[in-house]
Length: 154
Length: 432
Image (cartoon, each protein chain N blue to C red):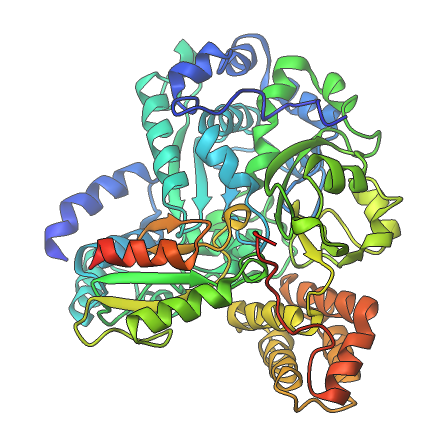
C-alpha cells in the first residue's frame, strides 16, 4: 500500500483536522480496489501510516460486507435476492448464473475468472432483477441478458 | 394532485444533471438569496415554518432537529446527508443523486449556512457506483464554480464537502451508526441520549438528514416556508418521492403530493398490478413497514396519519406491490434472511432474535414447521420491540407481525400441509 500514500495524503487534506480515524474506511476501500483484497501487510502499513489501533482496522474489515481479506475471482458477480428482485425472478437469475458458471454462490470458478455472490438490496428495485458485475449495475436481467453478458466477459 | 412537483421539475436527459443545466433552471439562486439577503437564523426559521418532516423513515420534523443546534456556541458543527439508501424497496435518493446532484448540494450549502457548518458530509452507500460518480463530478463542478471552499459567492461563508463511501452495511443507514462509520469504525448504533445534534460526529453537534429531506431546502428558501406548508396536507406538508417496485406495471420513482389517493396511485398512475393480476398486498414504505392488503389501501391517502389508521406508515417511501398468488411464507423468509444477515450483533435481542426468526421460517418453508411456530414468531418479534439500541430489531418485528396478522391462514396451511397454499413462488413474470 505504500505507493498509495500520496493519494491518502490528498484524501486527508479534504477532511477536517483530527479526522485521522475517519481515513480507515476510505483507505481500505482504495487498497482493495488496487490489490483486489486487503492483505495482512496492508493492515500493518495502514496501522503504521494512520497510527490507529490495529484492532480498529480488523474490526472494520470484518464488519463491512464489501471488504475482504482474501482474493476472489477476477470478475465479481453479485446477484440481489431481496424482495423486489425476488418478486421478478431473482431466484431464476441466480440459478441461471450458477448453472452457467458451474459454481454455487460464494464460490469461484476453477480458472479464477468468476466469483459468484448473493447481495442484499442494491436500491435498484424499479429495474429488478439486478446484478452487479464488479462496480457496475446490470438491471432488468433475464437469462438471455446473462448469457450475453457472460459471453462478453469471457 | 400528482402534478405538484418540487423536486422532479425537469425532464431527465443525458446532461440534465450538470451544473450548466442546473443553473439554467435557476439553480443556486436560492443559495444566492440565502447568503445575500438572509441571516442564518432566518434560513432556519423558514425551514421550521415549512413544517417539513424527514423522508428517511422516522418523519421527524427537520426544524425541531435543527433547533437543538446552537450555531454560535463556539463549537464545530457538522452536517451530513444520509445517502446510505438501503431499506429494501427504496431507490428514491438514488434518483436525486443521479439526476439532481446539484439540488442536494445547493440545499446542503443553505443548511450549512443556517447551522454555521464548516464541513459537510455525504455518506453514500458503498455499492452506489453511478450515483457516486455523478455526485463526485457535481462536487468538483461546484468547487470550480466557487460554491464550496472559502469566500463562497464573495461572502465570508466557507464550507467544504466530503463524500464518504460506505462499504456494505444496512445498519449504517441508521444515523448514529452512520456517524460511527464516518469515524472510521464498524457501524454500531449508539445509545441516545445524548442526541446526535448534541454529541454526534467526534462528539460535536451533528445534523443528519435524508437526501430527499435536504433537497427540499432550495425550494423552501426560494419560495418561503409558508408556501411549502401549503403543499401536501396540513400536518404533513410537501411532496414525497415514492419508489415503487415489485408486481407493478410501471415501476419507478414518482413524486406525489402528500395526501394523494393510495389506490389511485397504484391503479392509475403506476398502471396497476403486473399482468393485470389482482392485488394481494402492498408494503408501503420499505420492508420495515407493515404490509397492507388490497382492501386496506382503498380508503387511504399517502401520508403518515392516514397509514397509521391502518397500523402502518410511509416509512422511506419504498413501496413494494405484491400480486395475488404470491406465497407470503416464502416472502417472509426473504425478509427474515435479510434482517438476520444485517444485524450488527451489538444487542443480544436482535443478534439472537434475528437468527431464531430466520431459522424458524426456514424450517416452515422446508416443510418442518411446528404448530407453535407462528406464536414463536410473534413472541420473538415482541421481544425485540424496544429492547435494542437502534430500530432494526423493532423493524423486523413489525414486518413479521404485519405479515402474520394479515396472512396467518397461509402460514397455518403451510405448516399443516408442508407446502405452500399458493404455487410457492414469489415471481410474477413480466410477460404474463
